[in-house]
Image (tube, rainbow, N blue to C red; front, side):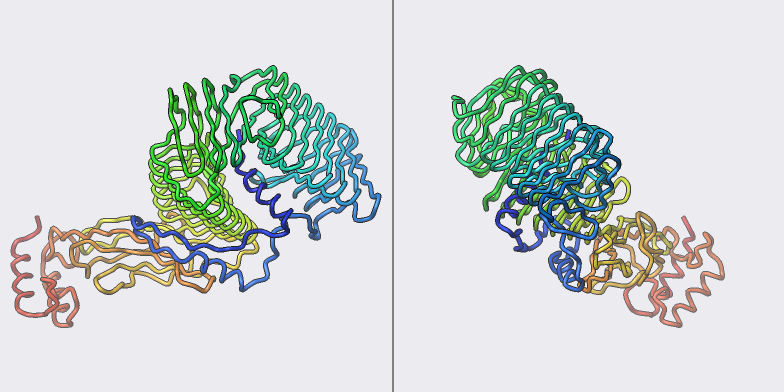
Length: 599
């Protein structure tokens, strides 16, 4: 099961399409006090670098690139597909353009399908095959009076989820969504009617719209509540549903702007999506997911939430979102921060979390188990994932920033897209993250270590960048240093080869007195601003045989010779007592140690 994180993104996209613009305000990066990290100003780090190149903005609405296929820019244009039609970019159907897929035809597309005006995509059997490398890379955007009408068609998601954003009309009959999953966002004016659809997907209605599902299989319906909505109801049990309706005659709901009719559907599940200003009471129900959308300037703190909760009578008030559950079970909690929300989640287990617009989300000592979807950032949203575990995929989009510190990611699906930044500090990932478009991934860390004075030891960690094809940021070099108050002393660098979970440097600790030291790795990049740094603690223990200056495990003339030579040259090895002076006491202490032998 996927979840409506992409719908949140598409909702903003739908607004942007209407308004003709996208949010552009930048916000400062949060800097938790409990991390031994040196975080740069990510706005400066990335966006100053962006000013140094002419990267093409991502196509978030109807536009054109060299790889796009546009049908309808000539009035009355019709494309009939009887064989394989490969589209390397987007398929854009505009004006009164029309694309027809015949039974022998296959539309194979590497981008999105965008339909505006009175454009239409009609499938008479045949196939639509999306080519994707991560979830929701492909979108079907049906705006204005656009129409998608499929009968007997197979839609193939290439093993990943696709997103459907609808303000026009969609009519599917006897359609199978194979090798993937669909998340439907139905916005103001949208009209969706599906009959006998296999693997129908999940449905979120955001605004005055209509949804009709007849004899469909695998349905997740989100009871979506907007500002002012109030519901008090018992939802049907999961599984087969004879009839479920919401319309203007529904007695248990007020302020619901859409209509829905779900009839004779199988493998059905129920979810609740509550927006700011809504008030829900759910009784005697089994909810697959409960989502909460925070879209004001509130500071929201959530502590101790857990998936799989069974509640006799529990209420939650998070900003303007009000939930009450009576004798009900919530399998998964999903959390979505919009606008300028400051969302803080601690010691919790949840299924999905999301940062949009200018929101800042901080997750501490928590688990995202993926039962509700994944982790995602969009717009100029920021998320800080601290000392936490993620079992789900991770995606960043737009100009967003995602920072993980002291955390672990067990899904191999990690994708940075658009102009976004990911930064992993002392964080483990299963496989390499992928950077697309103009996105950049920083992977930096240094492990705590211990050594006996005089040992030559390896310092382990990571120092690398992963850059998308249009990213202006590349790895240059890194330095490894230790702090001997008040100065940082170079151990090695600049090193011009990146390192991933390997040896950063070799440290000869002969000159380091016993004690604790901060060690750090500093990554220099082509963005032209301050380096990205991470720190750890190194503990140096006293040698069990300090007079063994040759390190051969025995005391003899050669150790005396090394000491005398160092003492005469003013070498730190000759300062045997470490007081910063070279005098009789160093000689006396060396002789006493030599006479004591090695233990």
